[in-house]
Length: 389
Image 1 (cartoon, rainbow, N blue to C red):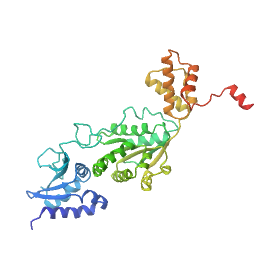
Image 2 (cartoon, rainbow, N blue to C red; image 1 turned 135 degrees about the horizontal axis):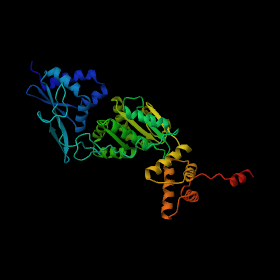
Image 3 (spheres, helix red, strand yellow; image 1 turned 60 degrees about the horizontal axis):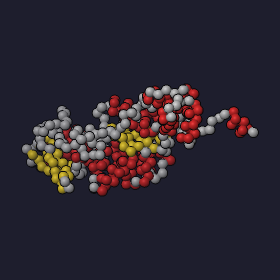
């Protein structure tokens, strides 16, 4: 009995359905349409988008190869027809046999090349698929992050995540703390370290605001599936300030789908927030429960010794010198966060430069009084006597 393209694909789907989870089967295999059987050994299938094709290649290549080979013999081959949107009109793009290979393996060579780069908001023009801009600041590294009691757990957990992204118990890693305590620095340091240690891993840092804006743009263009598919291709996804999702209900649905897929696929998630997951308001409970799957590590206000070390590191990096007593004075009085600590140092240097005056304790007192509203009062003998009396 001669097999048709439809019967071959139906038999393949029966096997696949028994292997993959139902939700994955429904998402990634049901939308596929079989087109034709060419030369008795090439099955042409149609997929809805470029992202869809890339996801199949990334996750189900061997499964497709084995099932197709079982149905059609060792010479079986697979070709894709990818539906593309060109100038507002729908069209398709066939990937013919004999073109350059993206994948080569012993099971089956799938002749798949996409001539255009992936359409996503982080693409680097002219580069091949998945070579996207990770949106990382190269200055944010672990070496530049001073370790103290205030951040030791979070920093070491971040280092562990960067060493083995997705293959550790800290997934997701949720970093939380107040303003200016280094959440973004630590999150991006993880991303930079992953890129350094694992060159083939796709890393992406994105703020929650940018994620929400992108989702809204794709929603207006009826391209939500492409948006979700793109993010599901990331190996290490870092999302900053997830508390802002509280005002974006539909974006939470997209984040839930992306989170579920990445976590189940062994990909790494790193999230930052101004509060612990249990204290976040306005987020779906199903999201919050997933945030609590891994490790939640807080960043606290740095202690006096750590503040001194931060100031000294900042001065060394900028080639600056300052009397020890001034450094101690600044570190003692600025107790809020690292950002204001560095801001006080910059203000002090600016006053010194503009007024052509040496930095001394008197200048430091003047600067802190005028520029840092949150500086604490200096404890003097006169102050103690007045308080006691």
